[in-house]
Length: 253
Image (cartoon, rainbow, N blue to C red):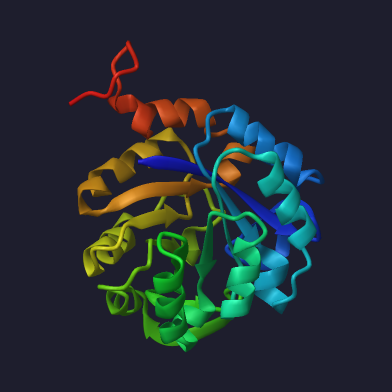
């Protein structure tokens, strides 16, 4: 299972929100590029970006920073937040991103997501953020009537590369992931699932390993890394792909 550090961008700074609340912002760094390089230096194999300005307003406020990050890193970078049209998705891919994540538009225009996934194999991800099992949209500001698991099921058979699933009630709380929610989401389709929200310590990460056989292939970690509750190198050693290698660095059969 991959451990993916997150950088949330707001006004060009590296921040975290508590349960998606823009009024509860903690600022960690005013240099997201340096932070991205730090996570890469500690062994990250992928970086997760969230454009909070884009999610809230739909405006490309952070594009210059996004380009700087992708240019500086050698690992793949994925981004979500405010990607609500094919044109926006393709503009972001042109910024050097490996993957773009579509959330609101997956509810409102699912056919657009399927078409993008067909045209950009392996590069389109669906973000499913839920409050009490129902999908929240537009930067978690609006609640829909769509069941999160039903949305996951609806993309079965498409070329969508992965589903990033977040239980908003756990996000930024460090209180542990919602394993029941993640299990339901993983069972809803055969598309790989990346967990997000609630990771507070190494034990929380280890608890996710039980879901790996169901298709949970990665976990995004934010606040716990910035608070020092989780050491990225230690987490990668504990649950990352390298744990399957022997001392001579050969994959274990």
